[in-house]
Image (tube, rainbow, N blue to C red; front, side):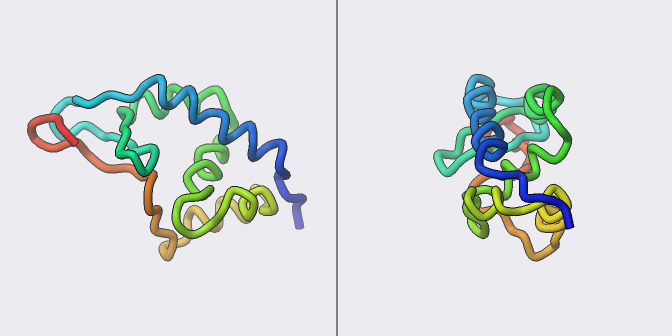
Length: 110
């Protein structure tokens, strides 16, 4: 079994929130892919989401989505291995509460 990612890695992953918040918008193209990033309803475009996460390992956004999002705390995610993170993220029973992918409406609003 692989090692847990640890608190230091989890803290670095959570720090990416600042980069995502710099991309928050209120309006999008009609039906544009959008990621809601918190319980305040702040959203970023799918393109901005992908651009921000492109600088990091591919499992980081999965850990970020899992952490403090309704089913797992960031502390619990820090004790998971990369394989466990990927399994939890891919589990159909995982239903993110605050941060998730969606689409803008026909008017481009959320």
